[in-house]
Amino acid sequence: MGQLPASRVTRSRPFTHTGVDYAGPITIKTWKGRGAKTYKAWICVFVCLATSAIHIEVVGDYSAKGFIAAYRRFTSRRGIPQVMHSDCGTTFIGADKELKKLFIQHTKEHHHITTTLMNDHAQWEFNPPAAPHMGGKWEAAMKSIKFNISRTTREASFTIEEINTLLTR
Image 1 (cartoon, one colour):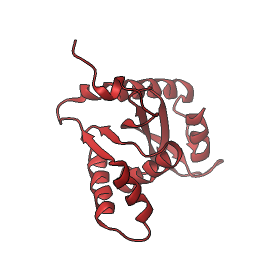
Image 2: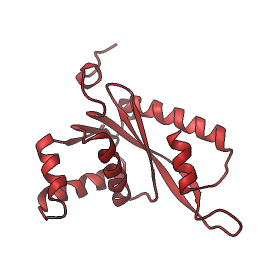
Image 3: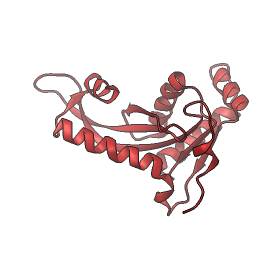
Image 4: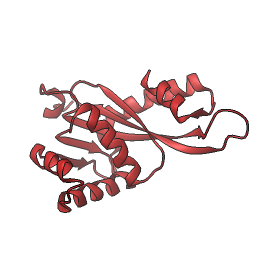
């Protein structure tokens, strides 16, 4: 068995080295009651590689903008990670391009974010395309979350507030 990467065994603040993955889709209702329309949402899981802490966000669509919104919620609560690890999902590749645009585009609106990310030297590392086993830490967390959600919800539909409460608890 090989050595663990330094990010897994070195002491650091939580979420300095973070793995991220998506689960879903899950069915969300627009409101409670009869005649409510449903739509798909996804669960975005951020896993600290050193402490195994988990942060869960609900994402309304499977796009780069949806992920960036979840990433902003994550960083506002947990701080900006130095290194993000993920698989080569199209959402993550698109989000990486969007974040690089924010680095280049130095507008007043994004000035604080870009300055913070540049000062922290935040970077994004992708697993090789045919190596899903390299994300074992966050894939194991994802498996546990999927199992527990499917066991407790039994295919029920929830509103966005209800699913946020369920995932937070």
